[in-house]
View 1 (tube, rainbow, N blue to C red):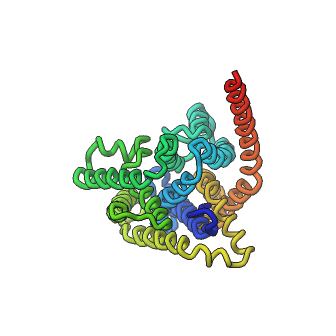
View 2 (cartoon, one colour):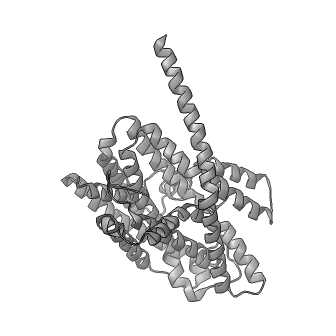
View 3 (spheres, helix red, strand yellow):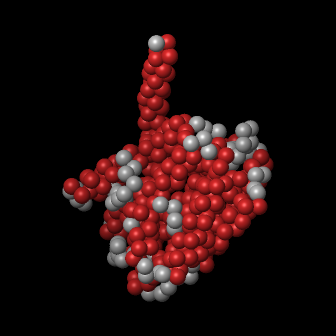
Length: 379
């Protein structure tokens, strides 16, 4: 999904990592959180895979790193309006389809005014929840970051992306330090447990790391950038450690024992190394067989719908399949396969048609605006 510079090879590794992250989050939610989280507490349990499934939540942090890299790369060669148009075409088609599919599945159990409101918030990408499905909260974080990048593009400050990265690094470092010193602060909890968490304090370091990796790929790292990068990396480790401890505390009662945050930290570090390797060896990777590279691209395209679809639909599938007598692990494997198949259908046949229609609408508005400007200039 990203090219570090004009004429550079497509970075297939980013697509591969995206899909792995989406799969990690899917297995975490369906294979662990569905029965261990106090919000769900399904009657089945999957202790055999809990140590594999539990650290999968860190896929979200890696998504934010990837966004930092990809979004700044996209903005580098785009005007403010073309950047905005690109984000709309990327986000809305899938969310319209996936939120509607989720609503249909939820409707088999219950439909009320609250669910309809949640659905409307979801299809409009309203930044404050609740939404049709819990994982939509990350879209609010993404949109807040996109807004910062858009403002810089609109202000003609694209060359000052290192300042954005440094600002995110320092703000996140200060926030994590305060959170560590005052873990029970109700004021700080507003930015971790409510809609205000979309403001990039808690997760800002992850976006900053992505920006710095992009700068590194361009050979544009100054001393200040290196200091900011190191700061963001250290804060990223601290943020994941905190998130791991919080996740472990929430699931302690159902799981029966705590979980170390270090597996999640190890996965995150491996993900960062993979991104660096994907960028550094992008040209060699692009020489791999075309059929393989096409498949990797498809997996990358599946990632967004998979992330949107997997939770509510996946948990409902687990309920149905275990009620039919399947073992939890068999039900998990089938549920994951089904949501992956749905995601493939959405990215192959659903998104392109909606995106094409939206693009046509944008083009018509653009033509009318250009005609109006021409008419006014003649007057």
